[in-house]
Image (cartoon, rainbow, N blue to C red; front, side, top):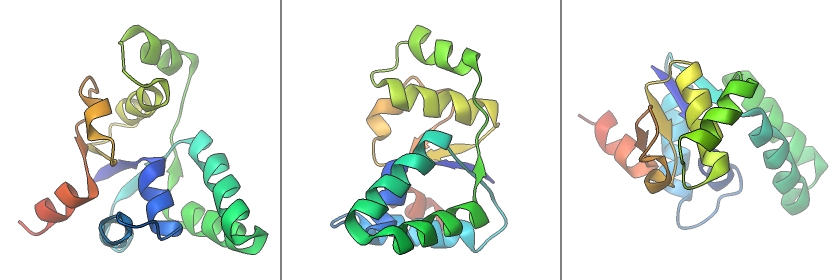
Length: 137
């Protein structure tokens, strides 16, 4: 399965942010412990490092990025994905970029807490709770 993981899910899991930690962590455990192609935005890597460093220090930030790079690929993004994120009327510019990157990488799903912002996405979005429910089917 090709899955694009949004920054909010990564932050919830790696920063143990309540009340979303459990479902985000469990979703990532399932995805990273099975054969999947996992993708993340380049801009998410820098943002993740910033927040981990700010809240837990440089060592934890580097550990988090090392874990990320072990399990995830950086999604491709060209000028066209940026234009598409503007032209297709996404309610959130950053989420539009994620949707277009997920399309470019032929992802089957975007894992995010902001499902509503992906209504226009060519790739369906699932919350961690929805993903966990589907994984039990």
